Length: 131
Image (cartoon, rainbow, N blue to C red; front, side, top):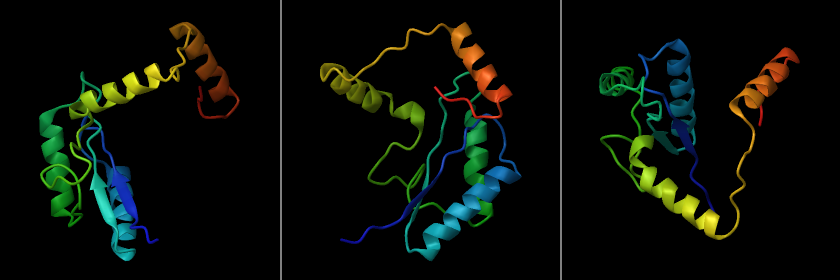
């Protein structure tokens, strides 16, 4: 069985792309091209307060200008559409429902203050925050 490699770039449209974003997109496009794979663009627009349509448009324009074309994503579609996280709410709700019915949902009873304290302690120890 052969598998087609699939790489992904998922910027958050809360501002314009920066050099780190471009580097990540470039590496993913080059790897997909080298392996005759697919490059997926997914828009992580879950930050409703800061995400803006003009930033989504700028991402698409900048990637096109750089020649970093995507195989699946906004304006191209593909088998896993939609490619904006905000448009996938119904999909996620359905999977949540299935997990809940199967008894696989485990609620967190930590308070926001407890979680913040845990993150602070992990960072102080030089570790990335984990839950």
